Amino acid sequence: MTLSTPAGAADCSAGYVGLTFDDGPFGNATNNLLNALKQNGLRATMFNMGQNAANNQALVRAQVDAGMWVGNHSYTHPHMTQMNTSQMQSEIQRTQQVLQQATGTAPRLFRPPYGETNGTLRSVEQQNGLTEVLWDVDSQDWNGASTASIVSAAGRLQNGQVILMHDNIGNTVAAIPQIAANLRNRNLCPGMISTSTGRAVAPTGGEPTATPTVTPTATPTVTPTSGGDTFRLRNEAAGRCVDSPNSASGNGTQLQIYDCHTNPNQRFTYTSGRQLQLLGKCLDSPTGAGSGTRVQLYDCHSGNNQQWNLNSNGTVTSVANNLCLAVTGTGNTSGVTIASCNGQSTQRWTRA
Image (tube, rainbow, N blue to C red; front, side, top):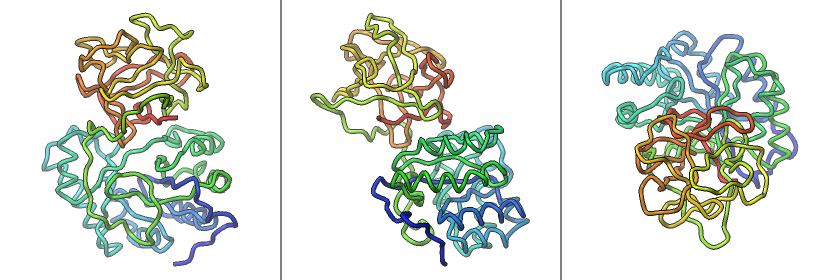
């Protein structure tokens, strides 16, 4: 397997990112995508639908021959959280069989359609030796995004992060050369998706083969900070940071997102008690709050409605109710809420 490698592509000092393409393979569209990736020295993970793979097995093999990794994206792209366990098993196992027949290797990665997941589905994934992979950045190519918008979305990727794109969209193929150039300029390289973390890592040269584990959503993986170590919480969908309007710090101040800056009203500290402190107050989920409730600042106390888990999949979850920190929109002054976790980029955050 030989990949054309543009000059400078080997400088990966800033790390690795995961380029992923869903829903294929599709005849000429997949060939065009593979050609664009190869010509620009990029490797990616292709999350294939079983029914498309069954009809295009030669294209699945072509994906592997082009240096891509292949993952499972269900057989028919249903809303799997609305299914019973046996239906989930069927969607996953039929796709595993088709992809193994095409490539000789059973996939180790699974992306749930629409990013919809729950505990039952994760259990089925684990039973089939699969690691769930969501995304940090949504290119919005499925929603008619322009080539420039897709390039801009990829420009938000940081080390270890994953972007959602799709196999059969012309604007996405057109974006590939600029995505490749921008990654090179930022000393980032395309990586494989780790079967132990679901994050992008340096390629090993073949299919991901490490023993997969599934990390529960609520497992905290961020070490509490100390002293002057502060950070911003930047939303992946919006590219904006959690912000206290006009630096307000009174009890009940509702938070928003706003263009990221270095002022104190965006600088958090994560304590050993799992509190997110801002302006001398704590990020607070009002007692008894349900999905859709705005989060606020409040005097710090030991209640679990002020305790938060910062998770390896980019979510921030409330210890009190296991709801995810989310945004109501992507523009300046959009509200910050807690909501039922759905894996979407509106609920994924990076420390900036």
